[in-house]
Image (tube, rainbow, N blue to C red; front, side):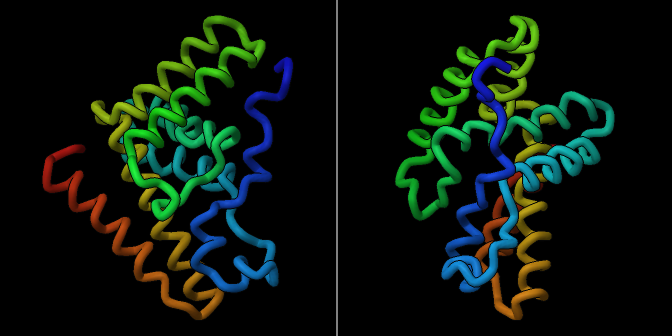
Length: 171
């Protein structure tokens, strides 16, 4: 890769955890989950939810948050308009691909995976979004046990996504 366009997610902390966990927010604890850790877990969970398309769904899970290298990990409190955030992510990802130095066929595959996930119209994409929230819920429960705090808002957020997809027969 010419300019390391896709490297560095292991240095991007999950902003939501920094906001809701006091030890992370005030710098006492630096063990906050990174976007790279989250992406790998999401990819694996998504693949398990969509075993017939495991490899493709896994790839979508890996790339679903890569634009955060450019725009950062924005929390819902920082985003007034979801469509605007999606547009920012899409433009950032296109720029990353343009400057990546990767082979054209690899760029085409990564673009297809990212944008299919963003459009959220296929079973595989929906599995990635469910896995994304499933990982958040599992991480919240882990942090609750470790820090002895209540992260109910994270669990409720995940539950709302699960209900939406399940009520609409998304998978």
